[in-house]
Length: 142
Image (cartoon, rainbow, N blue to C red; front, side):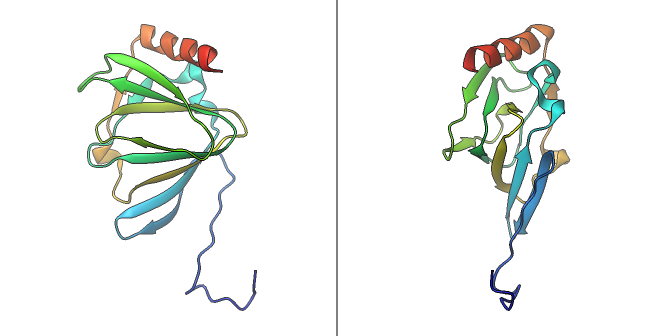
């Protein structure tokens, strides 16, 4: 890159560590990266999260990722698994329970509202049967 290029023209960000890291916050939106984390292996997924004020977009850039989606309002009543394809945008709708698991080489780009925070992103626990279903879905999809 041109060493004389002003930072007022371009900001270049990257993240290679584990888990979630915001890269760019601007006005109402955020771009983040989420990478493999051992906390989200199928045998450790025991809850799902939803965002009550925003959709959330996932784009798989490398590796593998399964999005787990939960039907239901206050609790998860049915679990689904979606094996993401590279470079496709997956828009998880506002209010939909979700979680994910990754291959160790996975890198996922996330676009969401900048004000997506703990206060508008509650978690709900999964039953023992639903946790087993996550493991079985992973075996089936991978």
